[in-house]
Each structure stands twice: as C-alpha cells, then as structure tokens.
Image 1 (tube, one colour):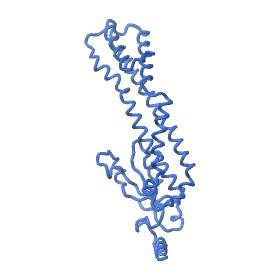
Image 2 (cartoon, rainbow, N blue to C red):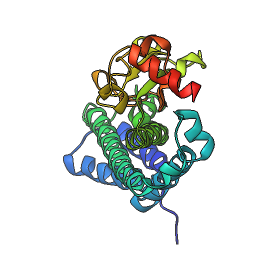
Image 3 (cartoon, rainbow, N blue to C red):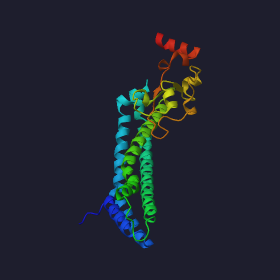
Image 4 (tube, rainbow, N blue to C red):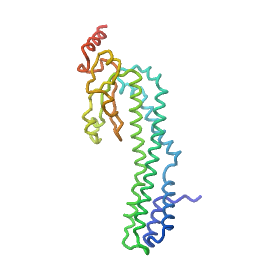
Length: 273
C-alpha cells in the first residue's frame, strides 16, 4: 500500500501550483484545502495513540507522586499507612486529569490545523490568476506551516503541565484527607535560575500558609502565618506553573511564630512526655 504523502509534501505541491497558476477558481482552492487537511491529520497521532501517550505520561507522574520518597518529601509528619486508605479517591484525580489533558490537546491540535488552512487560504487568494514570479516559496511554506510545526511541541508541553497539575492535586487530596495543618510554598525558580518564575510566586517561596479549618486552628494552637491557602491560587494552577507545596501535619513542623501560647504549651507537653 502506498504511503500517504506528508503535509510538507502536499504543501510544497500546493504552493508550487498556486504560484504557477494563481487563484483561478474556488474549487481549485478547496481541493488543496481538503488535501492539506487530510495530510495534516494523517501526520499526527490518532486519537487512540494520543490517549495512550497522555495516559502513559500521567500514570508515570501519578506513580512517582505516590512513591514513598515523594510522599515523605511533600508531606512532613504524615503517617504513610493513611495514604493507602485514600488511593481510590486519588485514582479519580488521575482519570479526570487524563480526560482533561486529551481534550485540551485535541482542541489545540484542531485549532492549529484550522489556523494553518486559514493562512494557506489567505495567501492563495492573494495570488492573481496567471500566477506570480515574485513568490518566495520557501518563506511561504515556512509561514503557512509554522502552526503545524509547533503541534507536537505543544502536545508535550501540555502533557508536562498537566502532569504537574495532577501531582499538585494528588498532594492536596493526601494533605486534606490526612489532616495537614499548613503548607510551605516552594517555587521551582528557587533551584533553577533558568526557569522563568512568576515574580509573585518566587516571592512566596518559603512562606507557610495555614489550611483553613484544620484541627490545630480549631483548638487555638496556631495562627494563619502568611495567610490561608485558599486566599491565593493553588500551586500548579496557573499555566505551566511548577511550584509545589510541602504540607505540614504536626505542630512541631511549624515555625514558632505560627504557634499560639496554647500551641507552644501543647508542644512542650508532648516533648516532655
């Protein structure tokens, strides 16, 4: 079976044809648009392949987030056995994120194809009947095809971003379901100076925010520190944000400034016991 021609090959033929003959009639243009659409779709992963690629990437991120080292790094003072009890709920976060990621990538892909065809149509209809001798075919192809060239890069970028969002959601569920009392904001820009961190996120690095309604607040053992976590956006919520929280589960994990007098007394009693 003959292999279908690639999008680049069809685009080369279309640009050559329009340059030579120009925009003569709408049917000629529509024929090239149909060929380009088919070639663009054929060049990209099928829906099934896309779903499999995204699911594999997110499952890998999910499993890393639930590894013992990762949990101990992001959940200070947690009892590991408690995580096993909420794994079914965490699976729900994984399934939800896979579906959202695939839908977003499909939407971006469809928009890129439409934008490419719009560029081609705009250029083609500008060529007078009889063609043109002044067309730079290489520049034309590069301009028309630039959205297509970015699709696979954007697909990987979305998958990575959704992976960060999944890990942030998993960590939040673990924290809330296991009684975390506060969270320390960590900016990725703290360790990677090449990362283009949002200034407001970098400024939050190391700040500790109370989780509203936690057991220590209800008992009057702590104050809200830098504020409440629900007063600011979540880590990983904004596009391509790589910040994360280190959740704190015990009074001894808090700085002294976040303890009330009652909290200091309760912590001292525990230490003496």
